[in-house]
Image 1 (cartoon, rainbow, N blue to C red):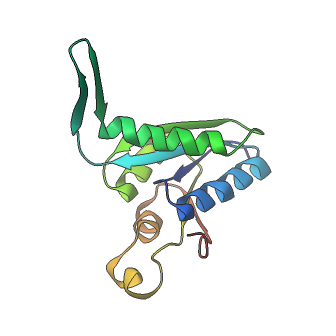
Image 2: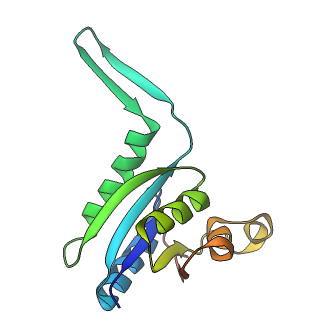
Image 3: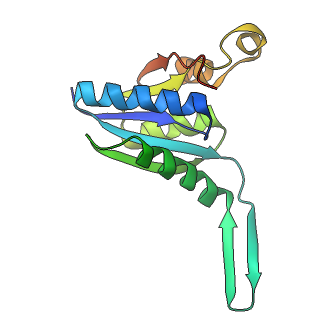
Length: 142
């Protein structure tokens, strides 16, 4: 098959489980994996004083989460990562379009009970994705 698989992560155990499912799927399909973390603001904070200052933004924090998860997935295939601005579902869809992804992988967190009624990232992605969507079973991950 080849192509690109996109998975969204937020640092949670369920997102990590979805990322592991995405990695396994990518390996089975000989595809590349792209790990994405969403952020929704341009807030920045400055730490330190004088010439020893560091600027940390929401984008930096999101990229750190994506990189950490990508690196934790181990070898055996091409894995890239990025941060994308927007609500999680919108950011995943935007990255899938940008990367010309074949599949978006999401977890099934909040697809039962009240979350199913109010909506979830998986539900929104499934209804609006430009490509196939794989919903990974992430229950019992947290």
